[in-house]
Length: 161
Image (cartoon, rainbow, N blue to C red; front, side, top):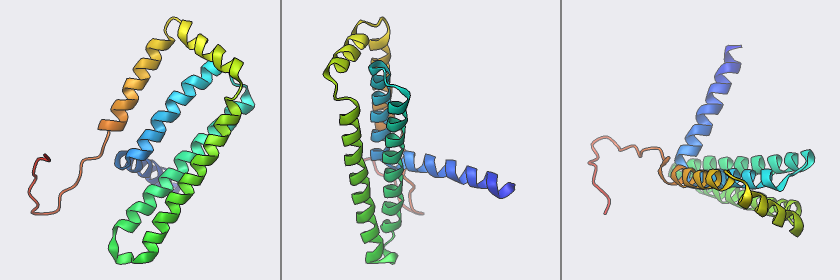
């Protein structure tokens, strides 16, 4: 049982480490949060919500794999195989993102529903306020929620110009 809980702890640590170290993952998470708000206003049914959730999780999962490959390739002792794995992980992430774009076009193509959703957001009393707050929080999350860089022993900190 202890191994099971340690696995959960390692999973959570890995997720936080990926989020803290990769701006692309944070950007995709911010875009997903805005997409979820718009989807709520779009009045999706349960099947569409399930498809959207699976698509978002696939994109985030592919980006986490890309982060892991990038980190493995950063150590030059692995040679060209690690660099090739990094490029392949980036390609996989791009393929999943393209698939997500196709899913979103299929889900949100109905022009009448888009008008209704935008009017719903526009004339809802607090929707624009919530959306603005969410947008500001997303920008802060992407820009400033970053793991501090570790310095090597003896390295002197210099301010960047």
